[in-house]
Amino acid sequence: MEVKIGVQHAARELVIDTDQDAAAVEELVSKALQGEAGLLSLEDNKGRRTVVPAAKIAYVEIGGGVAGTVGFRS
Image (cartoon, rainbow, N blue to C red):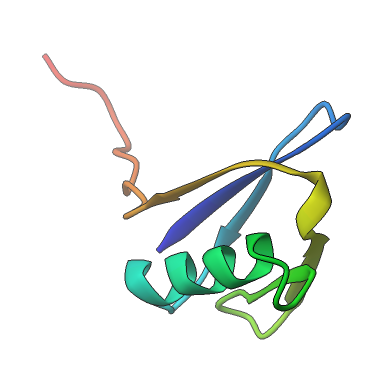
């Protein structure tokens, strides 16, 4: 599952590939934004953890991640 996080006053978005499903990620985002945690913490496929202050989150895009194609079509 690919998660894109826009951070206020940052030129680039954070992109995280995680094994969590969309419902679990949405619940974590919701709890962080409601002030229960104050931080959004997600773990990627390689075990690295990304922590973002909830007050600085501009948007979160939860998607399935699209596998790119390689080669040319005629």
